[in-house]
Image: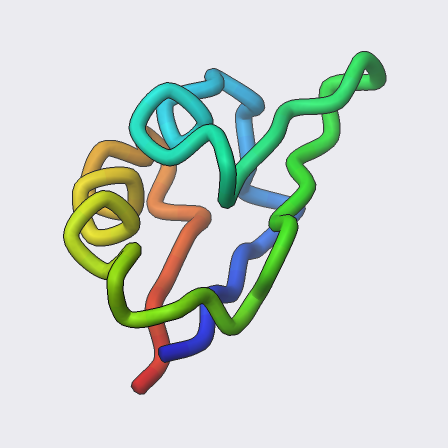
Length: 63
């Protein structure tokens, strides 16, 4: 599993961070940071929820 995101579509709402704070972080500058673009499978369920909750569809999971 690999996480990708389209910075041009990110609205920095923080939804992803609220579901998986150890994976996603909205920095002080409002930019999204993905701590590990290849997270362990044990994080899959939370990441799927975070991706589905993204209001702009900026996040994606590649298999």
